[in-house]
Image (cartoon, rainbow, N blue to C red; front, side, top):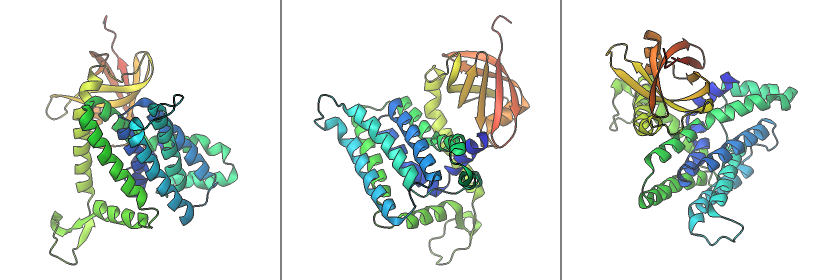
Length: 337
C-alpha cells in the first residue's frame, strides 16, 4: 500500500494525472479550503477509482464527453451556490461539499489516468478479484489527492479577503471549466500532448529558441527539478507560519502537519520545512517520495532535529529509512531530560 501511495504522488507530476486532478484542485479553491469538501473529494476519488479498476464503465468517448459537461456544470454550481436561493433544508456549504465529492468521483471514474507500473499491477490483479484490490486502489487514490490537501492548507493559511477570494474563485473555476470543456469537443488528448511537450522537452543549449522551426530537444530533468524545488519553496513559505503556530498539528495520536527543523549540512543554519506526519505519543513519522529533499539529507547528516508542536519547539532524534517512500522517525526528547 505504501508503494501505491508513493507511486500516486509521483504520478501527480504527469500531465494526464494533473489534468484528472485539476477539477478537485479547483473545488478546493472554490470551497475556500474547507475540510468537508476535501474529505468528500477523497471519498469520491476512492469510490471512482475502485469502480474504474472494476471496469464498471468503459473508457469510451461518449461517457468521457458527458463527464466533461457534468464536471464543468458542477464547478459552475459550486461557484454560484452562495448566491443561489436554496430551500430551507439545503445550505450552500452542503451543496458545495456534495458537489466536490461528485467531481472527485466523476473525474476519477471516467477521465483517463496515467497507467504507472503500480496502477498497472493493480489493474492486472483486479482480474482475479476486485475486492482484494480495494486497499491498494484506496492508497493510490489517496496519494493522488495530496496536491489537493496542499491546496487546502495554502488557502487556509492565506485566508484571503472576501473580494480577493471571490476573484480567485472565478479564475480557478474558469480554468476548471476550460479543462472540463476539452472533453466534449475532443481536445483532451491534444491538451495532454501539449502539456507533456512543454514539461518534458526544451531546445538545445538550455534556452527556448522560438526562431528555429525545428529545435533540437532534450530531456529537462534539471529544469523540472528546479521548478519543483521552487514550487515547494513557495508553498512552504506560505504554509509554514500557520503550521508552526499550531494549525493542523496532530493530536497525541493521529495525523497532521508539523514544522521540522534541521541543521543545514553545508551552511550549519537552521532549516524549517512543513511536512505531513503521523503521531503516536512521543513518536512522529514523516515521509517523502522526493529522495533529493534537502531536509531528509540534513536529517541523515545530523540526527539532532526539532519539531514544532502547538507553537512550541520540541527537540527530537531523527532516524532515516530510505526506500520508494523514504520515512523519518522522530523521537521527541523528554522535556525533563
